[in-house]
Length: 242
Image (cartoon, rainbow, N blue to C red; front, side, top):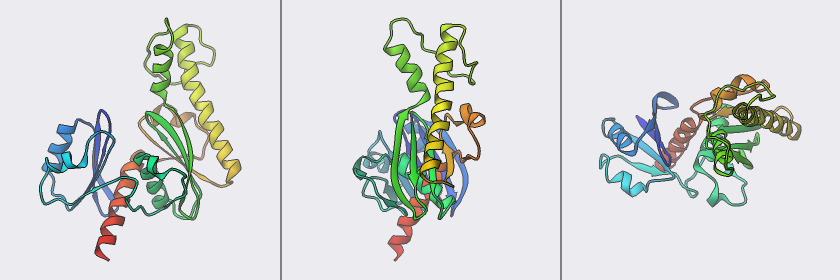
């Protein structure tokens, strides 16, 4: 069994795979919970992707015989990177792109990941990551209005409200929720003008707020990053056997 780990600043996500099949996954794990999950698993190979923990720290806490691949800018991946600064390319962005290219081969793809930031990346039908757009995410926008003003409250997201807010709270909700909907739909149109026929693939934790508001066709793949991490792991394991 293969395991892939996506460890963020606060929480981690883990997925268990048999070949290409995602058997199960868990989210919102602390680092200690993550280590416990791995130690309780029968692991053949493991890929560790993290922005907050060193791989050596992780290796020291799990089974000593588990081969651990660390995802960084030098890790071979099964798509090409035509990006000017590959060392700065986020692991989540490349993993989502790899996942989408594996699910929809030989297609032009717009991969949208709605997390802390929203990324809109373009992968062409030759399997080349061309780059894209990074934009503030939903909660970041709510936090920014609260942090950079004296009186605006910090509010929690809700389903998109009426366009014209009748209170400060509703006006803020409209600005973020309706504004983001307009942004996503507008950028998708721009990408489709750039590359007619592109398939749009959507993932990320904030997708449920917007899925029904976006112009079809859009394909939602909630665990796209885990799927991409597993494909990267398989790619490297097969290279080691050559």
